[in-house]
Image (cartoon, chains in turn red, orange):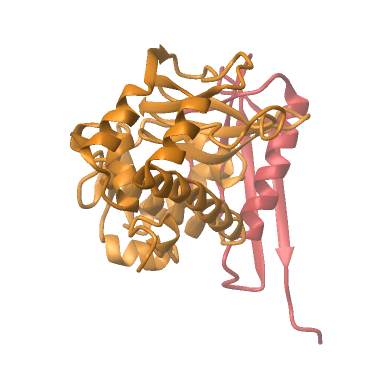
Length: 77
Length: 239
């Protein structure tokens, strides 16, 4: 099974050195979606907006998927 | 006698066992064997069998149809598996070794006979049952906490449980699990766990390297994870 590396960018850059074995890009996208949703849900609301991006590399270092999620929470005007 | 045996050491948290009770329990175990990491501890279906982990980290888990594994509890040295699962009941949960484990078998019918004969064993096995329920409830509640507090709570539980069997010191313990294992304990994605561990590290709350977890300030960390060890029932049955 190929290995993919999920680097997280949420203001800090968290590099994935261990990687995750996943069967294909479809599974990579699903993992990215699940991770983003979970991370957004548990990020403290410091400002009105939270954005998290996940960049996925394959074993050769090539970026194969990029995924991001933006949550904007504002008082109604 | 109890000091060298994680099972007896733990059971005595329910109240002292007489020498005879300890000897009876020890005589019940047979078929000591090694279970390699990533293998299930129970593979056949022998209804008259209860399993006891003597060494290593195991877990109760379930695999969802999509392939996601959810770990619902740890099985640490001295913990029984399938104690309450006779017949089909409870067998939907699998018990797997997360690290190489050493396991012994007990005959369920003989254990039940001992429970009927010895008050101390009766009390101890009741305690095991109540503890399992109490811990399961706490894990359900823990799922509601933000992921960083959830991990803190889980690490505090491991610290306390491993201290009872002499496998942790004041503020550190060996945790030979992968981050993916821990993600499946917390019910978060394998990518997300990386960020959660990172945030506890960056906050100076823990270090975790070479399978060694060290907690910087145990009191502070317990407060952060909203961890109160009462649910682990290590103070016995109360008055």
